[in-house]
Length: 115
Image (tube, rainbow, N blue to C red):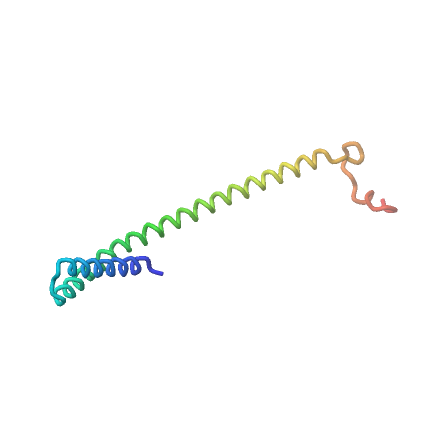
């Protein structure tokens, strides 16, 4: 939905209704009331369209900034989790028992009956 059109329509309707009510309060003739209401509805519609265009631009920029902030936070969280996993893997490798007292284990000695 285009925010500018919505706000422009709302401003136009409000301008029309306020002009009608004020014309009725001061007891103007019906033709004058309707003419003034249409003029003010048009003026308020144009003003509302400008306000709506500004609001649309501001909301688009805010949404883009918010999406970037969330993406940066997610990337930082994933990097932190990757560092934690690497730390756990390094600790597990350091604490693993070595066969052969520090010498490398031969692949053949891990298979029974072959050397």
